[in-house]
Image (cartoon, rainbow, N blue to C red; front, side):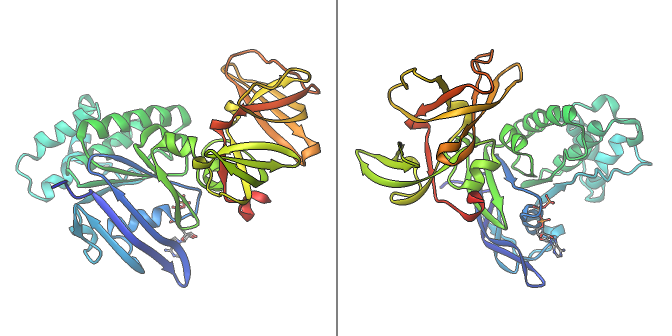
Length: 367
Ligand code: ATP
């Protein structure tokens, strides 16, 4: 028999005075995994997390932890711990006492040893005697984390825990959190609005929008094969052009885009006829000067005019206006160094059919 998932949500819904904050969320988090709930401000991430913690009661649906239905269980009886953006450390207690505090209250016999082990996990045992005020923000956040992991929760909930840190520290702490999760072997459910953060740390990312999960999967899958315009644009930049599926054979769909004929593999398209949004990531798009033959096996759009070239060191990003097609911003990015085109150049854009994805057009993407 396989172990029950660490966390399951079935049709979880939350309304506040008739306003829907969470609109029927289903998810399953395997034990020992790092799961991220990613989405823009107000999409319902925190409310979802609070329903797992028991701080909010679902309007409908059920929450199960370790195979046990906890929907009606009060927060303090749930085997979870939450780490928030604010560290809420006791200022008058030492670092060690802060980590030990909860264990002592539960009369855990080896509280001191466990607290020290927790401090070792976050690599701050050498600061055990300091007061929180004598620590940096990142160190305080690690203490808050140590305090949560020593309880050995079935699920550790993290609500934007790095939100108060500056960018460099935030990036360092992302790797640190990932290491701690792997080392402690705990299940982490992490809420963030930062796509890079979610993709850096999590095994599985659930992208939320307007109270719903739009797509759930490993970061590379979400990036390579987004299933909605929202996911395509929220996780990095995507070029999206509107077209119509006009034929399909041999597992490839033919799509007309303003007079041009493009292709998309049928298994990479969410639609098989009618209107479609064709997408491709900028780094997959190559520029070719006018007169150069387009590479075979490629989708080609053009001619267009380069309107912007930005060299960032690791890559060069181009913005191209395909005015004749009614598409004014197409992005290409090469990672091989120096710019190959300049603003004003006439170019064609080409990319492999296999990198193309097809989406159901929605009102938001069309605007
Ligand atoms: P953020 O990243 O800004 O924290 P979020 O994705 O975590 O956003 P939630 O805090 O879950 O979003 O809020 C989802 C929606 O529910 C928002 O429209 C919010 O205003 C509303 N909401 C949240 N808590 C309450 C509450 N206690 N009473 C009324 N409305 C609420």
